[in-house]
Length: 230
Image (cartoon, rainbow, N blue to C red; front, side):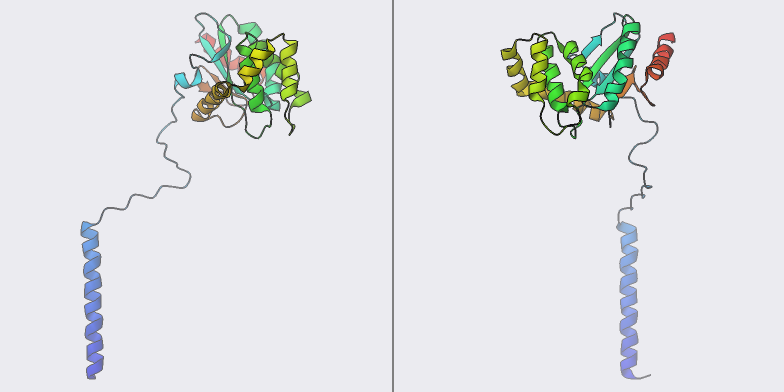
C-alpha cells in the first residue's frame, strides 16, 4: 500500500469517527421528535363538545317565540337571501304556530358573503326591529325573496319600499340602516355562528344539539317532540 493510500484511509476513518460521535451526542442530548399526526386527525381528541349555550342564545338574540318555561329552544342561523332558508321558512312558521307556547324559536343572522344583498337584508330587518317591526320585515324578506334574491345589484331601494309599506318612520329607519352599529349587530351573530361550526344556511340547533339532515317540517318536528318527551 502506498503512502498516499494509507493517508487517505486514515482521513476516512477519522471522518467516520467524528460523524458517528456527533450522531451519538445528538441522540443523547437532543429533544425528542413529536409524533407525526395522522392525516385528517386535526387537533380534536375524543367527541366534539356541544356549543356553549351563551354562543347560541345571547341576551339580545331575537326570539320569535318566547315560551315561558320552555323545555325546548330552537335556534336557526339563517341567510335571508338563501333559497334553502326560504324553503325551510314555511315549516318553521308552522312549527311556531303549533309549538309557540312550549318552544322558544330564536333567529340568528348568518348572511353569506357571496350573496350580494344578504348583509343589507339582515341590516334592514335589524333596523325595522328598532321600531317593533322585526318579525314583519323578516317575513316580508322571505315572501318577496324571489323578486330580489340571487342578484348582483343592490336592492336597498326595494327594502326601503318594504319599510314604507310597514309604516316605519323613514328618517329613523334610514339612520338606523346607515348606523355601523346595526351591521355590527348582524355580524356579531355571524361570528357566533362561525364559532359554533355553522358552515351553511339554514343551520338549526335544538336544545344545543346541531340538527342534521334536511330541515323539513317533519324532520324538525320529530326532534322537537323527542325533546319535549324527555
